[in-house]
Image (cartoon, rainbow, N blue to C red; front, side):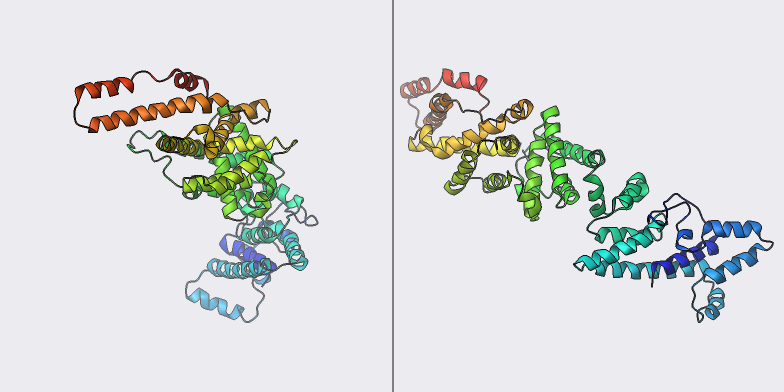
Length: 457
């Protein structure tokens, strides 16, 4: 069972079908890339051009076809007496040869698959030899799966083959993603053409979900991080990247550029979701080299559990405090991860929960270490666009008066709401009720109004 036998059967199939075969481009036999013709002639098998010449130069076309079939048919003496039996049953020679060719091809594909499961240099040597002998027939559709299967199981495909594939859209589209990755890593524009529609689809899906007027309930923040990562776009990007660090870096650069150009914070969401999707599939070649991995993992766990416990707050604090001189550029990626709307929503709602708790316990915001960390993270996330735009990677200083003046003012408003609510439930006492409403009504404190307009936090 060999590719040559399959090719021979394919040649006879062409003769049985019409006595003529089409031609298409290629490369030389010595280089292992297709030349002009179908590739059969390069293998030493008479193909379409040979048959065409025989038919135009002969006196009896039927005799020429019969001779071609005898010379290039399946070289099995015991089979020839059976051919008239197929004719009696109305089985066309074309159908018979196609079935034989498909059986040979499927058998060869199975053997290639088994070989691909093995490890070591011997495997690659055999696959490279097979690719060198088979690539010249890559333009024959019936035999193309064999060539594609060989390349799929090779750890590295030679550049000479990749150049042929990337120039032919049909061949490129038929390549497995494993092979395409080798083309993409050295061709950023080609990879960008593949990724761009997925990024546009992702942004559109997020905006439809966020601005859906027919939805009376807010479903945008409802799905857990793990559920969101199962989305089509995230899964496709994860598959396209595989364990290739270069492709991962390209995607991150696309996201930074688009975020900078559009200010669309959904690109920040995709930045975080992509890293965590690779974490879940245990692509350690990438997660081990991304300096944001541990930080993103901690933040993701907090969002998933909807709380920040003492242990995780210490891990996040240690990470932010541990950024050394010369490593400040990582702040750009950290700020994008914290600019994710899901992260901002979590940080803001968690801060409000802590404030309500402080009201109940009569505590002060400045004494609550987790609240101060959440505000620090919020300030870093809200500065993401400016930091990437200016390329000045410095953590923004949180205005101390946000903690000493704005938050106490906000807490006073919470107390006013609680007092009015409690007063409404008590028996009517006009004078006492009027005094309570007067004491806990009126405009918000000046500090509250000032910081609402001045501070993004």
